Amino acid sequence: MSQAPPPATDDLVALAPDPGTLSERGLRAWTERMAVRSLGETYVVESQSGAHYVVDPTEGSCSCPDARMRGETCKHLRRVALEITTGRVPPPGEHPICRSCGAETGPADEPPVLCSACAIDPGDIVLDRETGDRLVVLRVSPRRADETEIAATGTTVAAHPSNSGYPPGDPVVEVVYASDVARRDDPRRYAFPRARLESADDAAVVV
Ligand SMILES: [Zn+2]
Ligand SMILES: [Zn+2]
Image: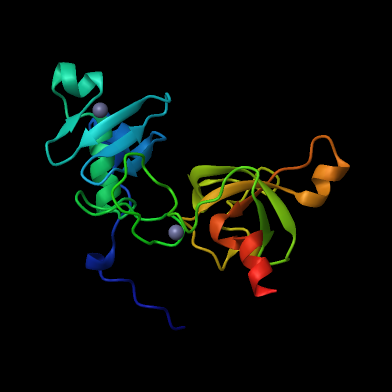
């Protein structure tokens, strides 16, 4: 009987650190739910509690009480460092990039999730590229398709088979079917990756 050779031990790596070796702040930087947005040189971190802090990784500063009062390397600073090294946000000094198409969005006062070409707003009519259905935008979520679970299926938006052709990091857009809006008081909401939706105006030009 033939067996595949065991991998060389040098090839074996862990993708997350051993929790037992982390400080409490280090562990929280890995495990707490936070949203990090690049402002160019600095970053805005939305914490699990809903508070927003500004982190400057070059200066090693954060506007939270833990960093300002106690001088600690807080969980927000650690989280920004993690997100830069894993490529979830650009390094300091590089322009923020569109979460859907990857284009540079240029310096901005507000952290842009989407570039002007990809931006859509609540109330916009869009078309599903897969089916051509007309949809009404309810909101653009700051969360990624691979982080947003569909309650009905237990999988993420990115893992849904019909979404396999779209970027897993795409922001999720909540929509209702235009046909449902007319028929029901409380139309069912659906979550789509941004790139799966095209503006109804663009579609009209193609037709
Ligand atoms: Zn902090
Ligand atoms: Zn874009």
